[in-house]
Length: 379
Image (tube, rainbow, N blue to C red):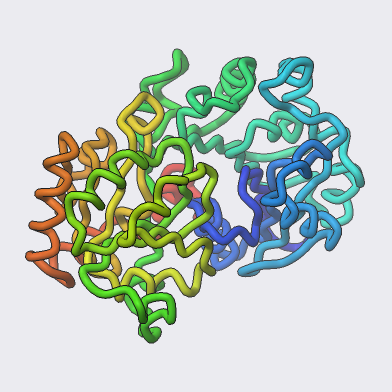
């Protein structure tokens, strides 16, 4: 990786993950801008292999360094897992679990000439070790969630994150709430919300998914991870009140949704490839964001909202503070009955309104990247 500018990105997600987060898009734009990008995922540990959902990360590790969208990536295997469970919740472990990997992360980065980079870009607590291992010109810390609010977050995580904030040259936060959560110099904090790959979701002309052939309209779609923040009780209530509407969930499921089998109008379609997701939106009628309202979701900048609009879908969401602050042409419901009412209104309003596309286009990842260029003076 000689003879060019370099960026090292540490992110919780796999480089080839089905769900594409902001750093995937930023990494691609850095490569288009002449950078050589290397991606380090959150380290895998033997304890992760208890769950089958982590086998894809094991496969990544066995394949070594891989390439995707011009970015080189590695999924490390650590012998020192950092978790909420004792005794693995200690701060020292969180700071050093990347130090004890097979093979050594240092060896990998040295092989690919990444021990000295122009930009160190961290969105993952294990990245603390990289601030000691790697020489860099600029250090960007990107905060995308109120991580201490996750139920499996180690109690010492805040201490590690605070140290990273102290070391960082720039701290990019995807929600206004996140910029005010920390007692540090406000001058290094920048509010840069999530965005959308507008062309990917707007210009896709794929045919209707086979899964939809036996699912009639109105098709109400949710695309994304189905985790603790997903309000399944709201889904059941709305599905019962609107039996003629079909509710389609696309994405990895980390909660049981066991009651969904009792509804003939709820369809769990599982994970789909990133290139296939636009057609699941295009042939739906409304996009929904049925999230619980708590401290965690107060700081969520939902990528799916931008994606729904780029695909031309009207959007109905619970009243999340960050999403509403962007003033999108969406419906924000205060309670379950209002969610039902707004769904009916959104379906009647229809798709492909100009304000949907205008909002999405003005919130593209490219627009965000141009802002970042100005802040850290990339050119």
